[in-house]
Length: 427
Image 1 (cartoon, rainbow, N blue to C red):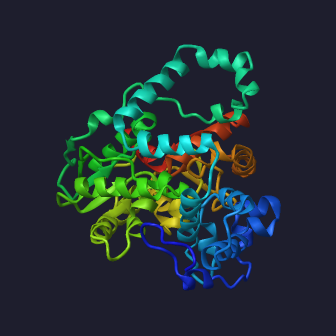
Image 2: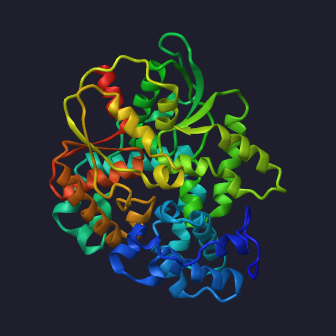
Image 3: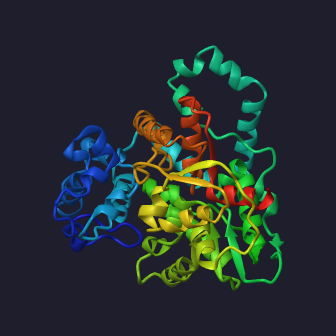
């Protein structure tokens, strides 16, 4: 390989050569569907990666632009008959860009702050969340929106995508153990995430209730940190590797039947921690042990089987596949199986459910216009189902779809699969 090695597992010639340029990925790629440009298709991006990674061509502004515009949704992997691991390739390309390409001063400072100082530090997340909550609850948000200053600064669309901050943070549950309701069927560790602890505390609480109601003792290990998914997707490989090391020390010090996450994006990275470390590194075996125990909560519950009593919910529901659950983890049926367990639920399939909603980690912040185009298309398909409730399996998708319901005035409720199960159990 012409380029010097990036920390962790590096793609080799065969990884790129699996792409035979057949084009079966094109209709699965959200950016190709939007623009019909070869350079913004999976095979087009792979061709560019080969020039840089194998043939030693310099990293150009054009290369960076096309790689940045990729959602890393991995829908091309599902469509690919040759087994191209596109997610691994694009994250390596971004790590190469992060290391060798001179980003703007603002981008460099933002990456350094977010990935190396904010996400790895719960106390900073809490402080930042409190400031944002003050902005949202004090009236400053309403004033900023009404006088048009956000639009003047070019921030109005991004600001609409900000998550509401919780009244109480889930961090207070770290170090707690929740007993099973009835005979214990499994002992699991709950991976709570990072931003979710200040924006999705109720979802995390519901996850624990549903697991406990179905015979699981749930441990929330203290000391756990961000999974590193956002850093890995952005190419900040050193930050992702350090977060993985910290999580190994927390979750592998005790025996659990599974490590459970309710965030599809987190789960995809947790299951691929071994990509962050090369086989000769001592952390590689830890990464494999960690990944082997990781389960999405829908995957785990569908396999375990529900034992808690479910009450009827007479509501029409549609399901949006989270990209990193469907395409990253190859899990399609588990969430649908759980939804069908709810009595009287009217479940209707969503057309093009496998196409990204436009959230894609930080994509809706860095590529807001494209993200909103994808969201508009998604909401058109959602409206065609006449569903009262949209369910999905990833916090980022929840935020994006809630923004879509507000922007397009559909009045639809947006919930995680687990929140709907919890509602049925509590009804």
